[in-house]
Length: 312
Image (cartoon, rainbow, N blue to C red; front, side, top):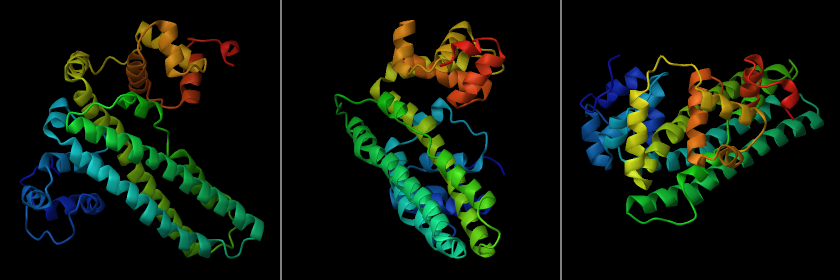
């Protein structure tokens, strides 16, 4: 399908990707949109159409990357609205929907097996609740203050990036346990139902995290320091996309990452700001396609950037 626009009918948007029903619901748009266009429905709900289109593109285009112009034309308040409602959806609906399937799935299992699985699942619930709690109590109020021009001391979007943990790894482990480790005597329909829930949540969380990292963060940087962000955006535009070789500085940062140094330690070692370290790490990930520290460590060893003896 061609690129989404605010002039298209909401029904056509949903026909193109049924998963957008969940996104629409989280920003206050229910299923009774009839023949209305995106712009018309957004006007009724007090939403910015460009922002809604941006969210829909993330959920529908695997390789979608927002441009600086898209970020400029979108409203950070509507992004916060989506994030807040998503947090409630994950905790109050998505995870709760899994519980009945887990109960039926584990019926043939020994009590010890049941306890282990439930403890793992409950641990993930707590992890997710704490992750979203930080965003609700610290990040969202901070951005809301920035929107009205009030700077809050002691916090910046850098702290969010530093504390933005991966919320997918434990869910992926849970999925593998359900598929590979539980006995065949478990309820087959319950296993399939649970796996469908897990896969759907994984996909949604991936989009959610992308929106935080690649839409919310740059929009907040623009609010924090408009001139600095414009200069960085211009530099990114001028960088040739096909140039994927690591620069000398990026190789130095990669070695420091492989040695187990934290962002602040890397900044102190190379006499640069934490923000610059984060930018370098994003570029390293973009160029190598590797996101985790263990993966980057292996990459550094295989490319003779560091000797295995230097790894603690």
